Amino acid sequence: MARILIAEDEDTLRTLVVRGLTQEGHDVIAAADGAEALDVLGREEGRFDLLLTDIRMPLMDGIALALSAARDYPDLIILLMTAYADQRERAHGLEALIHDVITKPFTLAELKVAVGEALASRGKAATGEAPDGGVSDGGGAGGA
View 1 (cartoon, one colour):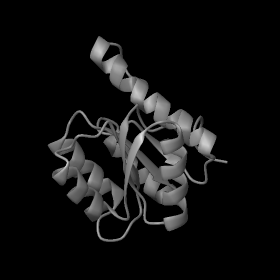
View 2: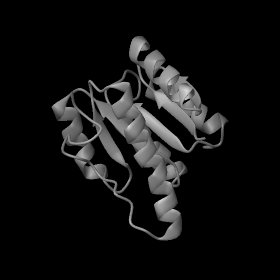
View 3: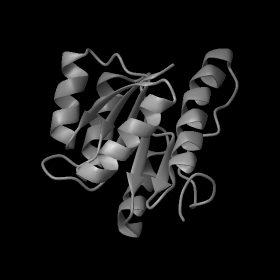
C-alpha cells in the first residue's frame, strides 16, 4: 500500500485519520503542523506517495506546506483538508499542485475514497491518462 504523511493540528482528527488509513494497510506518519510535516518530508527525502494536510494550522499552514512540498518533491500527491470556505478559496490557485480539497467534516469512508482516488491518479499520470484532479466544489469525498 501507500506511504502517507498527514499534517493535522487537531489531535482527535489526526488520530482518527491515522487509524483509519493504517487499517487500510497504508504506512502512515503524522505531524501536528506544517512545519513538523516539512521536517519529516526533508528527513525522509520526500519518500511518500501522498501528503494529506489540513489548510489551517499553526506555524506553517497547509498552503505553504503544499507549495514547499510540490517544489521539492514534484511527484508527491497532495490532498488538502479544510472546514473553512475561505481556506478552500485560497486553494483554487493551486490546481496544478494539488489533487483535491476535502471538506470537513467527512466520514472515514469518504476520506478513504478520496485517498484512493488520489493514489489512483498517480497510476493514470504514469500511463499518460489525464488525472481527475483539481479542486472540487464539495461533491464526492467531501462535506457531510
